[in-house]
Length: 122
Image 1 (cartoon, one colour):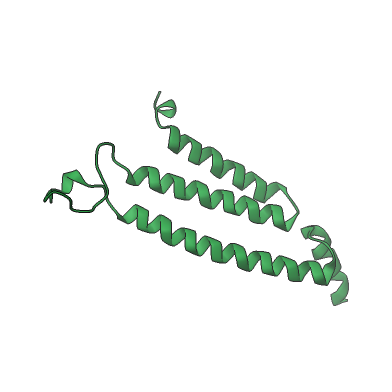
Image 2: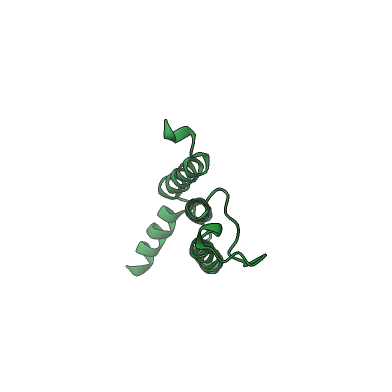
């Protein structure tokens, strides 16, 4: 069974499921942000696993070897690095907005924030 030979891909899928359920089942905004960060990490792990090929090295020409078959594809690594930068920026923005929501409503429970905001409009 290939499920148990692809350890990293299996771990990525499990991490993604953990992050997804954390986002969907928790009402606390900080826990939702943590769930999204776990999902991001799972996607990066999966991309890194798909970009790695056993027996090949990083695409840096050493000893005059210029054969394409000697190196891995650098695009998945570039995507992972770009994704990490974007993920950190988005997480920082969401945490800053969560702080502002807490100052305004004195809670991080999403249902309570919606209820209080609904009462303020009337």
